[in-house]
Amino acid sequence: MRYIFTVTPGRSGQASLTDLVERCGIGVVPAFEEPQAHVRLPGVLGDIERRFRRRFIETHELLGRGDVLRAFAAQDIAALQRYAEARFAWMQRFAPKTDIFFDISKFFIRGLHRQLVALAGRPKIVLLIRDPLLNMRSFVNRGKDFRLDNNSPADTVNELRMPADMPPSGLYLWAWTEGYLRGLRLAEEAGLDAPRCIFTRELENADAMAGHFSALEIPFQRIEIRKAMNTNESQGHGRTELSLADIEAFERWREAVPAAIWDRLHFMRGYDPRQHLEIKR
Image (cartoon, rainbow, N blue to C red; front, side):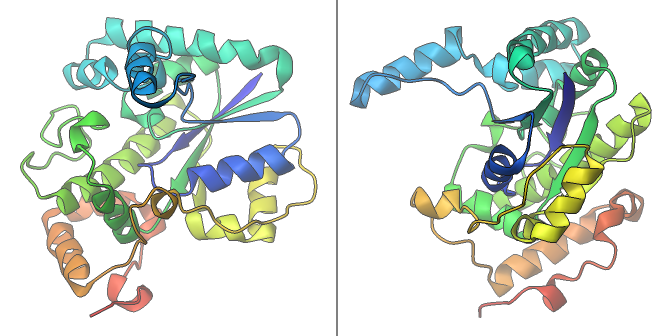
């Protein structure tokens, strides 16, 4: 079985990519932030069951968060190896059913990435890239606790160290940047092919996605595009609409990032939010 791992901060089109791979790919299993907690009980009992399953069955650590984040921040290699081996064993269950396992998850790059790549041999890496401002606003709209899915920006293990007490906009812009920096570093360290960059907007372009499938060596049938999924809107978190204040917050944050760090994100060269984004005043 071959492996493809996705590097993404989340809120970048993973649901749409999963749907596209599931419908059009041949001999490939897309796993969207798996394993999910398979809750069967209704209402309040379901909430209790979910907490139980995340602790003992489809655990946070098997998913790639929880104690994984803390082990990564502390560089507890023994713990990371143990968690990675458990997740890799879970992935092996799909081997009889597929030729390719496509891990579409924001948690891959949060801590287990080095260990999973070593276990998987020479996997392919995909950078799923959404505009950083839209990504930040989408996360802020959800009002989620940043610490549930991220280590601290101040941790020494980071590619980009920044203050831990930034406002939510800064925290999520940091997470966007840090994830891609880790992905690029991972490919270099492991001697992998250059990561394949898939921009969120390309998920609505059949020709572009056919090119990506071919480059990733995924056999496919005719690419049929569906309307992009907006899981924020469907869950009642509102549309992702930017304001002038968002643009100005990005520009202040961008000035705090060393030029050498930003230059590593080659796919962002020439990025100008005032030119490319519609600003609602």
